[in-house]
Length: 376
Image 1: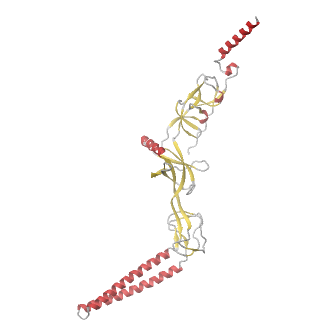
Image 2: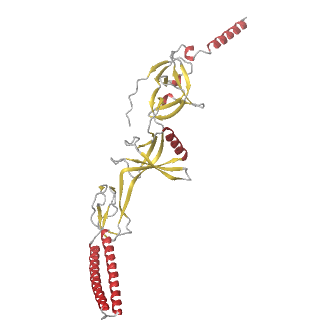
Image 3: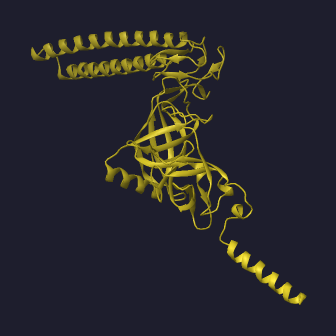
């Protein structure tokens, strides 16, 4: 009799277990629905973008060197100054070169006088030959002397020009406008063509940024831009994570690709009026379309990932949680674009989804509206 009672109790327990198997755990225990934070999916403008490592490069960069030998005179600048085109920056003692110029001027003047005398003698010999009182031999000799004097004058003039050029090299001028770096040689030292770089001048505004892009990325960018008709704009992210205020434009794509990396060098140009970008500086380059599409966006915290792919939870009008498989796009400023599987206005769980199972009744609280992001 006792065994029959035990069998009846076991069957009753099994029946109750079967009846309650479809009821959520919280309902079985009489617990309240889990509290979750929800936020409606919104339509937001989010640009599709790619990010690369780039390096700033000056448009013009000149290394100043001595072209003649001599003592270096006082500097005409301070390290880091903005200099103008043709501004004198260094001087090399000019006195020896000025003396050479004066000597060459005297030699030229002597050659001029010799040529004048030779031309006079040639004219006389020509008149005597015409009047038959002179000989052909004398005329030929005077003609040869005149040609020699003319050649000597040309040689003296060439030597004078060379001396004047050497003298001009005693003033080292900047061929471009830009910012000059640290001087490598102090005044009073002997410098010459073998002394190396005295200082470097770089043109900082505008400035170029070079970065490498793979063939696949380049083909996709060309297809997207040609299909939509949109141009591309370039942004920079600086070392502190902030975005550079000025937008850039692509102005050059190299004609060859690197066989080792399959990368192709691309160049963009930026205004650099404040001098925040320096030649050789490493930056992150962001390339995006000029026209920004509007997409369905949710906070990144709402999206989870498993072996099947991305998913999130939404709450319907009966406060029941539903799992929704989605496809994601670009992420920006804590938001992720949902390209498939979600409509604008649907309430997405952004906090507390760890306690939620599909079909579970929840207690939703709508998150406060976020402050509008500042435009970069």
